[in-house]
Each structure stands twice: as C-alpha cells, then as structure tokens.
Image 1: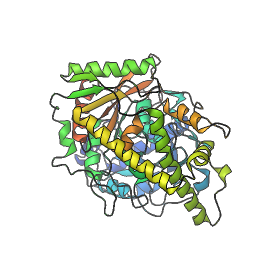
Image 2: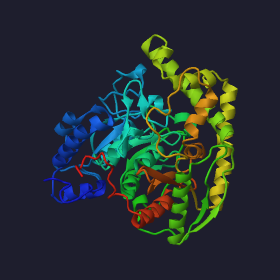
Image 3: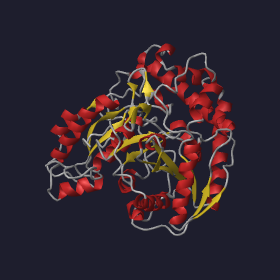
Image 4: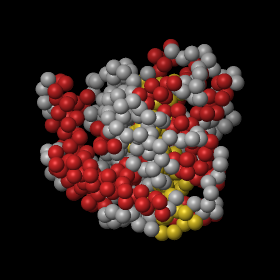
Length: 480
C-alpha cells in the first residue's frame, strides 16, 4: 500500500505506528517506501551520510512493539553513535570511524520500535549554524536548494522537511535543533538540561550545554518521543525534574492564560525586518489565543556571552582533538580541520584550567538570571534567527579571519538560541511564518527549567491555529 496516497503530506510518526498496528500496512512497507524516498531525494539535498537501509530491512520484526513501532527514521552523525555506522562527526579527521555501540538515546529510541534507515549530515564537530563541511559537502534547504538547511542538525531537518521521515534525531549545543528547524519549516524542541541522555560517549557536552532530541513535523511526535527517551541516565552529571504526567498528554490540554515576554533582539546583533515581522505575527497569534504579551529584555550582552561560551567550546574541542590524536597514535594534523575549528582552537583552545572554570561558573550564574526571568514570565518569545536562511557558502571562513569575525558571522544569524543551552532551559522553534521569498522563519519560545509541558501545550495550540504540515517545500519526496 502507498502510505501517502490521496494526500499531499505524510502521516506523522504516531499515526504511522497506529496504522501499522491496525494492519493498514506493515513496518516493512513503511520502511521500504521511506527508503525509496530517501534515496530518490538525497541527491538534491545531500543530507545523508550512511545508508543503513539494507540492514534495517533485514531486521524489521513482523509486529514491532513500542509507541513508534515500525516508524522509519534517521539519526544525526554527530556524537550520537549508531552501532556499525560511520561516526564522522562531519570531519576529515574521523571520516573512517565506525561506531562500536549505540548511544543511550539511540538505544532508547530503538525501544520505541523505530526503524533506523541511515545517518544524517552535520558540520565538523557541530560548531556551525550551516551544515557544510569539507568531508560531506553542503546540505541544501528543501525550500531553496541554494540556501542553507541550518546547522548543525541540518541533514535531519532537511529530510523531515522533504517528507522522507516524520522525525529524525539530532542534538543541540547552541541551537542545532532549533536553527535548522527554523530554516526548514519544521518543529524543533531543545529539552531541559539532563532530560535526555548524552552517554555513554559524552558526559555533559560543552559543560552541559549539549542535549539530544528529534526534529519533527508534528508537535505530538516530539512530545511522545521525549516521553520515551527522557529520564535519568545512570552516572549522568545532570538530571531534569521528573514529570508526573506524560508530555504527550500536555498536547491535548490548552495551557492556562500565559504571561509571555516578547524579546525582539539581543544586542549588539540586529534582527532583519522579516524576522521581526515573524515574531510580531507570532505575538499577535498568542494574543488571539488568549495570552498576555509584553516586552522585556534578556539579562545579558551578546558579545560577553559568546566570548565566555566559546571559552568552554574551545577548551572542550582541544580536549577532543587531543584525545583523537592519542587514539590514532599521532597528533591530529590541523590542516585536516575546518578553518572555523582552527580559529576556535587558536583563540580559545589553550585557556587555563582557571579560565575554563570561571567560564563554567559564569554560565551557571547566567542560568540563575534566566531562571528569574522565566519566573516572571511563563514563556519567552523571540525570533529563532535574526536573519532568513542564508545562501550556501555565506558562513565560510579562512585562517586570516579573526575570532571576533567568527562571532559576528555566526551569531548575527543566530544570536538567541544558545542562551538557553547555557541556562539549561527548554526552548522550541515553531514554523509559523514564511518570507515573501517562501523561506521559513521560525518563532522561538522558551520556558522555565523542566517546563516542557508548557511549551508542548502552547505549541499544539499554535499548530492547530496555524497548521504547517500541509506546506510542502519545492524539493519534497512526495512528488507534489
């Protein structure tokens, strides 16, 4: 049976699993059709690293169990190992590495019944807001192949937006789920610090700023997956609050009247007029839904924030590169790294232990300031990005560029998303607006620590009021 017959979109993951349980089609049929879509559309997107389809087809059970039993999906190739697949992390240095085990989040995902068809592209070490690398090339945006799909989970976002799979796994250390979700017109939520496991390969990921989850077409798939993969991991350095009710249940219950703080910009980065228009449109929609919106400000200046955050990123990148050298028995050749990574290492890769500790203390103190802000407001609303999706190649750097130029280039594009990685609070990009050039522009919503249920309840109302699943990009796997 053709799963997408008589429809201009796909069923989401929960609907697909339900149809398989009811016998409308089999898990093998669902996987085979997704595999055909993936192989047909990938030459236009360059979003795939490893095709695991043949192995996946051999191992599909006749009656898969779990909330997502039989649903095909993809996993980002970045510190999220899938046993037997390459784990390049987008770098020439690790281009031949093979994962010997599943990440804990992948194992928990498998327990939901998913079928993993392949791995998706990432920039080197995930430290870019565009998915372009010397190893893998550039991943295109399904809405305009000349533009970026965002980063660093750009491959996953592109495949979801192109309707290859209903959701795909990614991770987020400074916006890497939400930035590509915004660029590709799909839904991306970054969970609370400690809610989703990072191990066993990673303990805390950029001093606790990194986290794992999925990019999805529907809000409810994101909530159901977070219910399934969330929860304390043995030995993990952080743990999120325990939810008495499922996050999926929050999708069915409208939130009470919310007090929403609207923030248009983070100084010194200026937002483009279209991004301001998008967030103001989102604010009006929230008012129409019965919520209160008032203007406020972030308790931080952007350049100080990023100088501190890159102290952590630089030190941990140095540690990782040194570890790779020890594993290979020879130091990593710096010329195998991207210029962007070399600039980060040059500026921040040799900081002292005291400087690193001071940076971690700084982001913890910043988290307390943000906690006070989200105690005042139920939700913070801002643009996901300060610019519309940029042309591929816009984020290229050379060794002659300065660290300050790197900061301005990347964070004039995405100034806000990383704030919530540092604070540990949940945040989401919701696709509510398209530019006159038909490029998606996400609106960014964040809540207090452990309050994903508020975000999912709000997102479900936004999704009902301003649906997006029917909006197909020009490059799509459905043939429409």
